[in-house]
Image 1 (cartoon, one colour):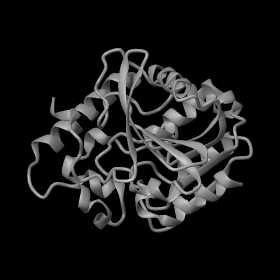
Image 2 (cartoon, one colour):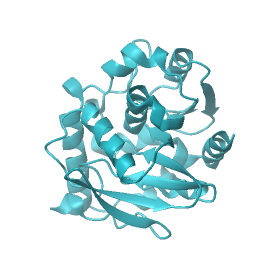
Image 3 (tube, rainbow, N blue to C red):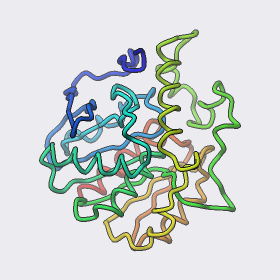
Image 4 (cartoon, helix red, strand yellow):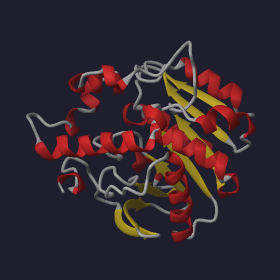
Length: 267
């Protein structure tokens, strides 16, 4: 099945590739570094890799799991909601002997990270949300992905398209397209009614007490930066950092953002 192939354009040197069975669900996790554990939840697509995470490996043991049905982790029909993902990750952390950890997530991964923090707060030392999905914001809604042509997606992800060029095929690439199709299919199976908004987040976010950093790009064309202030108001004592001149994939575009997260985690 072509969606299980490794993305040839993603650099993995320096990272261990772990194939882990979590209660019958097989997933792939990349790991590197030493120190306190830092887990990163990726967003709705994995084609741009995780080069940014190298900035953290000098200070932390970084874990980069592919969600079931994304990247190198096989699709599982057992996963039909984000709650299934949250329970899966709780079991993964037990398998990895991570009693407490720092958790970060971007976009869809930010929603998953926030839902994990609301479900298993005792497992987290800190929470970092990078332009997270999940919150209802009538005045500044998330862009409707169904109305965006595939060729226009990169313009909604970054301000500087050169950041994504190394990860995009020059001409039609069947493996690349197949992987994206599988990821889109997976998203459709786990999101209630196809919406990125989270009932759990919208009803319980104000109860969150985990030490939290929110990071957002001021040129985010997918989830408007105005949502950042709504998140900050909802979470007690959350810190907010707005990064200038970058889009939705803040970590890919901004070394400053990576350093801000590192310093927050070390604090």
